[in-house]
Structures are given as structure tokens and as C-alpha cells.
Length: 147
Image (cartoon, rainbow, N blue to C red; front, top):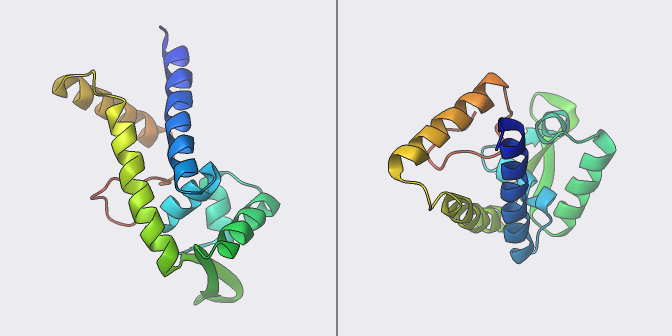
């Protein structure tokens, strides 16, 4: 299998696992992504839009729906009174902690057929690919500090 096919198929595989996990927690895949991003810290709408690759109207709808479910809230931006930041609520923090741990477990299990050396090689190569392409931090390592 070539690199293009392998990368595209693996992205579909991870996407499917992520979406299934989100459904089991009563979330859409996009809500799961939003909550995982907000684990690190509250963000402004423009930052969230850039990180999640969403247009302003799509992001507004996503935040509105997630806020109606009591998982996020808008709060004043301390640096710009005209702007708002999006933050997790206590309910959102509790839910995303469980969702994140379970999703990590499921995605980690995708590599169960690899030995430790192969797993490390895969992680190193994918990490370099992510770093070289400046992928936003939309899903953190368990022990990674906030950006």
C-alpha cells in the first residue's frame, strides 16, 4: 500500500473510532473535537475556528448547540471586551475527561498488532508528519502541557 492510500485509509479509521466514541457519549464528532480542544484552556472564536477548520457560522452553531447541552459557556475575553472566549463547564470537563480517556484507549488499540518497536516507529513518523505540517493542537498527549 502506498503512503497516500495508507494515510487516507488510516485517517478514515481513526475518524470512525472517534465518531463512534463520541456517539456513545451523546456527542457529535465535532462536539467531541471542540471539547478536547477546550481541555487545554478557553479559546476565542477565531482561534477555535482556525484550530477546527470551521467557518464562523459553522463554529457559532457548534458552540451554541454544545452550550445548550450545558457543556461549554461563553465568557468575556479579558484582553478584548468586545470578544468572548469559549470554556468548558463543570459538566463539560467531567464528560470530556471520560470521553478523552476512552477515545485514547480505543485509538491506542488500533495498533495492538504492532510490537513496541513498530509502535514507536509509527509514532515517531506520524509525529514528524504532524510537526512538519504545523497541525494545530486539537488532541493533546495525556501528559502534554497546555499550549
